Length: 174
Image 1: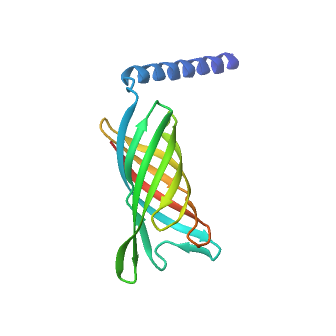
Image 2: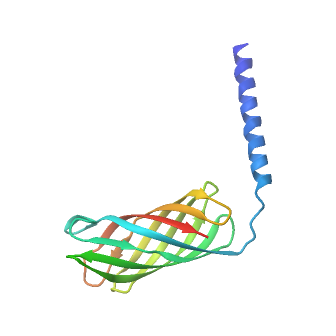
Image 3: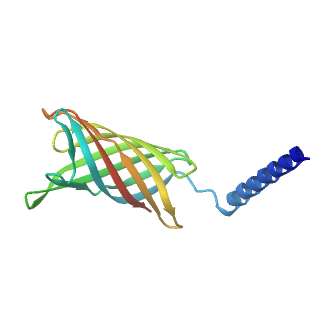
């Protein structure tokens, strides 16, 4: 009798999940591809590791970026992204634009709003490298989506030691 109740509960749970997924698919029309979207964000580095150890953002200076760009979505699972990021540096009471980052990448999109974007990085200060980006949609509306990303840039070149940074990005895509 106990096994019968457990099997019945499992069957009801499976039916509920099936109907929930069926209704969710019927409510949302399939998007047309290819499709172009734009985005704007604020990026704040947490800290950087290099030969000299760890340097936290806001310790001796403050840096932040303002990413903006276009995404060419080819399907529900794949897209191409081109991002440009002006980086600002505030140090000793003075603020300046430090460099511009050109940041193309391929988007691997998943149904749960999670996206992985491996990006190439070309900075106007002579540095270059790669940036794996892990992004999650945290709010989705009809005309826009709000997302949170974790970026892990690795940079080389310009006679400076290699560096590895962790950064957070909050943005809106439309």
